[in-house]
Amino acid sequence: MFLENAKRNGWIEVVCGSMFSGKTEELIRRLKHAQFSKQKVKIFKPAIDVRYSEEYVVSHDSHAIRCTPVENSDNILLLVGDVDVVGIDETQFFDHNIVSVCKTLADNGVRVIVAGLDMDYLGKPFGPMPNLMAVAEYVTKVHTVCVKCGNLANHSHRLSENDKLVMLGEMHDYEPICRHCFNEILIQEKHHNGLI
Ligand code: ZN
View 1 (cartoon, protein in one colour):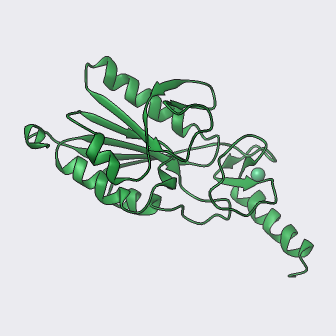
View 2: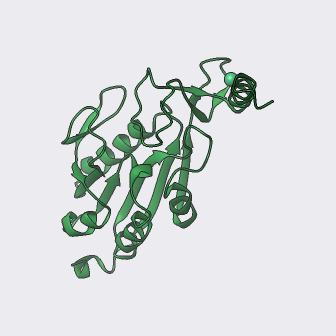
């Protein structure tokens, strides 16, 4: 399926950060540049992410680009066709097989740009993201500022009580905070729960 691309030079780019860090905006910016350059672009996202639209990748600042929701990572290889660039949004929600899917695409000459949360709300590496960062040629961490102190934010603090890991991000569910404020909150929560 990729024989016609075999001599092209593919690679993997990862764009990651906390909630509201501008990951999706950066993904859309890179994909639109590729489209302006007359490259064939295809965009995927996990079918679980139906926050705004089932057919568009939409950033928090309402930029949108058409995309294909897929149930699992293997469907990307089935649906990709002959393209120059593949974009994947909300990549943290994919199964771990997404890593070999991205490698297969890059090995066959496709530029792969994946965007996703680097850490979950507990501060742990999120799903396949750490492995994708390991195999990628380029990793970009984007940041916003901490809502509590204005320092550089790299955590997504969950405001709701729900401890389900796969929760989609809206402003009222999460806030971006820095390492220091994240640690302060952890200590406060341990006090609150009688663990200290
Ligand atoms: Zn802070």
